[in-house]
Length: 56
Image: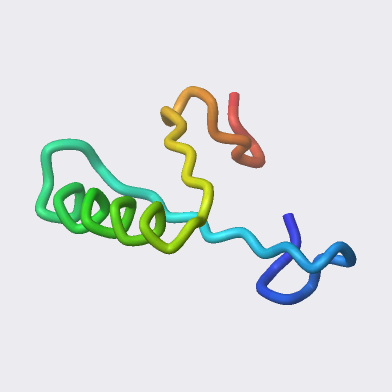
């Protein structure tokens, strides 16, 4: 995945890792609402779907 401003097509991606049932999950929910209100697409994936290197 390209970093901020690195993509050739002008897109950028923002990724965050949040554990369930934590204070961070509450902040992430507010962030999701804000991004949606600003017109950004937002997708939540489960850890099992995450493309992590070295996963067994």
